[in-house]
Length: 173
Image 1 (cartoon, rainbow, N blue to C red):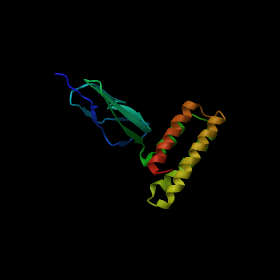
Image 2 (cartoon, helix red, strand yellow):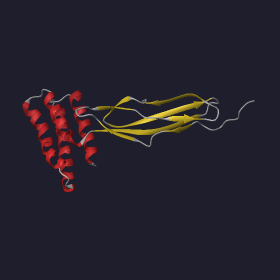
Image 3 (cartoon, helix red, strand yellow):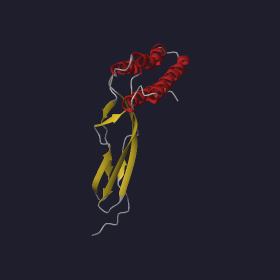
Image 4 (tube, rainbow, N blue to C red):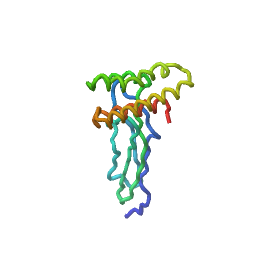
């Protein structure tokens, strides 16, 4: 007997996932559970990136798709946000030192970050904007050093990604 199925497979996915990297890391392995059900049976299903994938700093949308035996397609998605721990400013300072840049360039990039550490470690909400301003100053310095050739794109991109993750962690706009 033929089944007249017009209903798409239904997904159950996380509302969203937020994780922090390990100290010094720019990625995190994120595992999740996404399940799909259907009246006539699912013939294929997948989520991309898959569970236990490595996610980079920032927000990545996981897209899930399933097809049932009659060809109906069900989709779902959710965001995985990878951030850094608030104390990770020192990690970013160390990463700059590890680049082997001329000392003047290194110091110009590290200077605003060194002024972030103390206000970031207190519980005074009045200092939050000062932290955000210094992170903006750092990003502008990276852009300037990229423009003048002191940094390559391969050096600048991870620094900016790390800085943006810190901004997310501190609640900067």
